[in-house]
Image 1 (cartoon, rainbow, N blue to C red):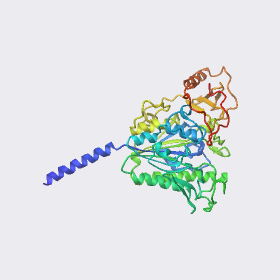
Image 2 (cartoon, rainbow, N blue to C red):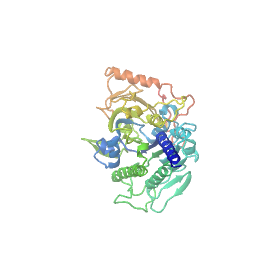
Image 3 (cartoon, one colour):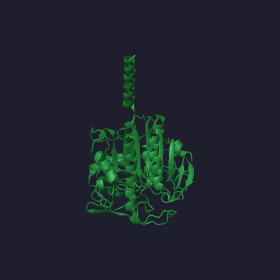
Image 4 (cartoon, helix red, strand yellow):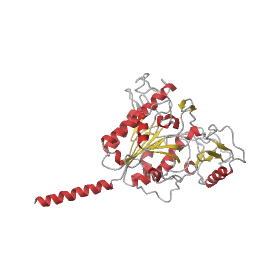
Length: 439
C-alpha cells in the first residue's frame, strides 16, 4: 500500500513538473506617456530620478536606438497592430474598426488579457473588448475627464467619477496589481499604457504642492512638477515589479517598457553635457527617440542593445516570446527583437520608416537609419550631427545612404490601401487637406 502511494505521488510530482515546464510566459507591456530617451538616468539623463527603471535596465536589455512616432495615437496604433501608419491610421484618437491587435492574438491563444491606463483609440464602449481585452480600467475612453487628482475613469466601460482626493495613476496601478494577482495561475497579457508623465504637469501625492481637492485639468499645473511625475511613474513601475516578485512570477514574465513619443516641448532636460528641449509632435530625433527596456530574469542577460528598434517591433516580439501565432494575412512591418534578446546577434532592421499625418496635416514621410534621415521630399539629414535638422546635406553627399533610404521609401510608396480615408482629428475633421499623399 505504501509503495502504491509513493508511486502515485511520484506520478503527480512528475505531472506537476511537466505542467510547470509547459507554462506559457506572461507578458507585460508598459507604455509611458511623453517620455523621451533623455529622461532616464540609466540612459544618461541628469534631471530626473528613475531608480526602478534603472534597476530593470541594469538587469536586462537597455535599448539605445528605439524610436516611435512623434505623437501618442500614431504610436499606439503601431504598437498594438505591428503596422506602420501608412497601412491603417485613420485619425487622431482612433483605431480603425476591424484591426487585429496583440490583444486579439493573445486572447485567441488562451491568454487572459487586460489593459489599464490611457485609451484614446475610439469612444465606442465596446472597443476594448473588440480589440481583444477581457478587462480594462481606462482614461479617455468614451469621454475626456480629468486624469490626475479626482479623475474620471471607466471600469469595464462604466464611467466612475472620483471626488475623495484619489489620484488617477494610483487607481490604474491598483488595477494592474490586482490583475496579475487574480491571474497568477494562468498566462496573462497586461498592456499598461500609463497616463504619466503627460501634460498637464500637476503635483503628485508625493509632491510638496499636492492638493487632494484639485478638480480639473487646468488647476495647479506647473512644469516644475514634471520631475515629480517622472519619479511617480517610476514608483508605480516598481510597485508592479514588486508584486510580480511577491507572487514569484518574475521568472515567468517578460516586461517591456517603452515611451510613446518625445518629451513635451516646454521642457528642457540635462543629458550629459547637453540640454535637450522636448520635441513631442516633431519629426526630429528628439520627437521619436524614446527609452526601451526589456526585462526577464533568467531569460534576458544584462546587455545594451544599439540595434535599431521601433514601435512596430513590439507585437512580433511578444508573440514570438509567447508562441502566439500571427496570421500570414497580417501585413506586419515589425521585426522580432527576441533573437537579439537571447544573444543571437544583431536584429535585421537596417532602417525605420515613418508616415506621419496625425490630424490630417500635410504628410511627413521619411526613412532613417542610425545616422541619416531621408524625407520623401528629397531632403537628407545627418541627424546625429544635426539633431534639429537645420542643414540638409547636398545631393552629392552620402549617395549610399541616400540610395538605401530611398529604397525603403519606395517600398511603401503604394502601401496605403485604396479607399482608406485621410486622417482626421478627433472631431472627424481634417486640419488641412493632403497635398501629395506622399507620392
